[in-house]
Image (cartoon, rainbow, N blue to C red; front, side, top):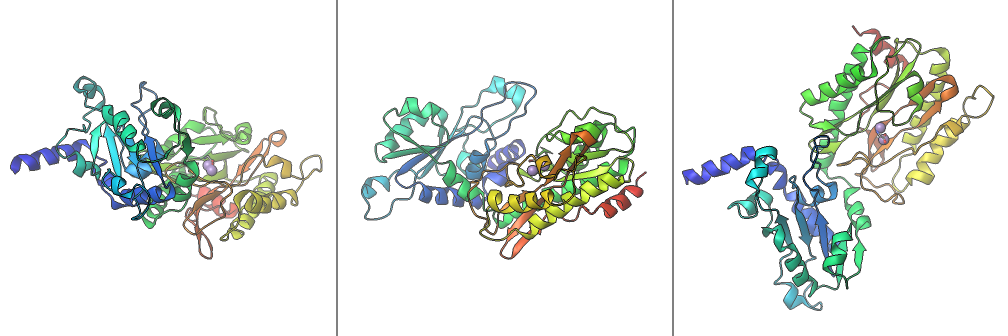
Length: 424
Ligand code: GLY
Ligand code: MN
Ligand code: MN
């Protein structure tokens, strides 16, 4: 018994994802997915071990969503629970509902990349929450056996599957997976709120050091350092700190320029904590005070954002509903230096879903539902004036509108100036 406890304690420290992996939510998601792909064997491939020193291992997020598993080289098979009285029921009921395939441990490699759970580890089933854990080498054999009983094969990638089962058409299950991932559970919403709170603290940390002469990377470092110190593992996306001319480049992430007085800095930076992302942008004056023209453009973008947030309602579509509200606002307020409307300077989408990925799995044509988490992020980018303004919040769609999860971070220009006035 003591040996068993010792062995278990050892694996717990070696496998920090254990808590996540055995959460009942993962199994519930697999059961729901099975119902959405009737008569099909569904296959998902996890990410492989990263082979370079630039990119850390990042689990394929659909794979994580349905398995909670964060180690490389895994494969997942899910089949729907057979309904009594349906064709093949007697045979299908005897087959495994779900199998997690794990690569065999490679001790030499583990010296470099750490201890892994192998399919033969005695507690593999307890650790993963799967009834059936098999070596990855058995994947093809098990898949072929299951395909004898099910007419369809479902996946989000068909490359290796075409070779294994050339006679089966692979049904793309992206839409079914997105339909589940788009609506967040209370635990997911709590995780996104936690990430959002850490990201808000990070923006405030950058504001405290913001002044002419500071480099963009120093502002980015203040933010990343802030949320990593809060226990967030990494950034949800490469931090964007674009000052002056760089404020008009949407995904500028070189962050190498020294900022100057009289400029604005677009800071689109957020953490990933507990696997969940947030997405927040604020645009601030480097010297603490907006010029009259910067403030004019800023207030137009803020007005568009408020109009779009007010338009968040159940059933509304992101592209044709919300974006149009923001565009119409931007295009009917203010003018450029040539007397032209400003709509043409809004050159990106207004909104996307946020979850495990910052641009989360989504069906763009899906009407809004309670429990969805989306951004609202209008922007105007006028290179001729060296002014780029984006204001982005992450919000939860509710039964009666929206709750702005990042609402504790000021967006009002007076409040931003007041916050900057308190800096060191
Ligand atoms: N941070 C990336 C985006 O706003 O979509
Ligand atoms: Mn965004
Ligand atoms: Mn963003």
